[in-house]
Image (cartoon, rainbow, N blue to C red; front, side):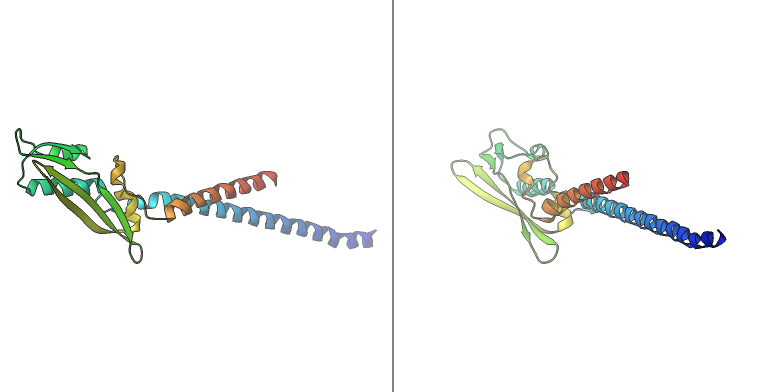
Length: 197
């Protein structure tokens, strides 16, 4: 009996050790899944809020206000009435005079972004100002500067759709949503595996 017991003991120890190794591998796999899930979540959050902490130059709405407002302030033509595209801040800035010679028509601004080398874009905002008396006089004013791609989102923030321009970056359109979908799928897989094990 003593010999039989001595023979069975190593087999029992080996079985327990094997179970412990199997359990340890499961724990490591679960830990890897959790790390992958949290990494994807943090990556998605970074893409969505990181640009908030990057200082933008001048938002498009303020560019439009300065562009048109400064031009009219330095122009000697007196305006009786104005019409066309208008923001509330610009309306407060335009001075009109009863009986003045000119009617002002402000065309819808053109907002474009051109891709430059590296992570930079050239921003161009152009506005046509039409002064009407017996004839029409068109003055075109332009704003041009250079933006980092991380500033595009901030400068496009405005209540006026016409002042946003089309977002020239392909990254927010495809990578951001793709990462969020991937993070969601990975999370579901990880949760299902953890609950079923």
